[in-house]
Image (cartoon, rainbow over all chains, first blue to last red; front, side, top):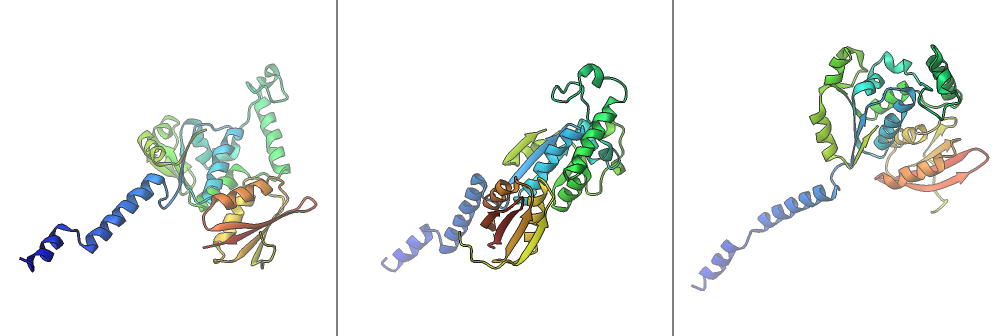
Length: 190
Length: 81
């Protein structure tokens, strides 16, 4: 009997290897729960395609990438134009409905006025050495930001997959965006 | 903060405005090794707060020093790992 006792207790108690495995398992679960895992994540939904509204998602995406975030930007509706190689170089700014612009709405609505306000803004951007949309997009792509183009709105706007910058992901929808958002530390709708 | 450190490399981002000083600093520091110090020379006044925020919010780097001169802002960031 006395020789059996150590064997019996050894059967009940988990082995050192089992304990080590359990500790690893718990550490993984803790890391996941506290967000201390491999990376922080940011998910942005970009819905606007005017010159002024194209900046915030790109500035935040590139900055978050510099912080080490894994960044996904899901572009839908007019936000698609930011990823559209040709259209992204001709994004427009309108004074209509923007009381902060120095042009009254009645004048801003005249034909050709959007072109004037866009030129004004483009000149300010150039004079101030502010990065262009194209520069910000290329930089963000280089930094590993994932840009997604919503498939439903690609079809709706009659765009082609080849219209977008190299590296842009197509063939994705709301469920993909939602999955990213659920997993992200920061979620933004622009 | 100690002022005693050797500068490994200097990054000139004079003229560039937000978010480029931080974005370019990130690319430059990626090329360095642990213990190296990157000097970032900027003219953007916002870089004082932005580089500080970037260094404290990002793992693997730390802010060693910042100097505010005449329209020039110098930042020293060390790669820690």
